[in-house]
Image (tube, rainbow, N blue to C red):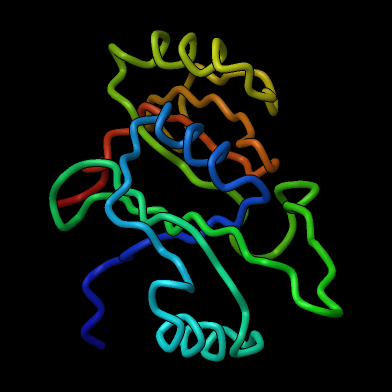
Length: 164
């Protein structure tokens, strides 16, 4: 295999501009817009590759946190429902299979300030903040939800922990 990394994580949303503002509050910036109308052939090909009708309509933004090639990217999308479409909901709890949450990290010295800023935004908090250790690694964790209920986890875990 020649996989180099994860390019992006897709998050579907019901109100694109509200979700864009939320992720901008977290520090993400729009890298480029994604609109079916701007590239109908490409959007149709992507929809078909994802098992959706070729004429599915999507609008969104590729958002990026950081500036280098290894930056975290979100593919923030809002799909126009098609006949027979049934709107889903985010996972009701963290023990379901598949992707469950997005973890973003901050420096230990910025953790409490970042929590205060996130709370000022009026987010739904998932549980009690953790301040302790996990598998011997000191860490703090704070979980909250985006406007559609997707769980976002803020942690202070050093991304280089355990890397030799």
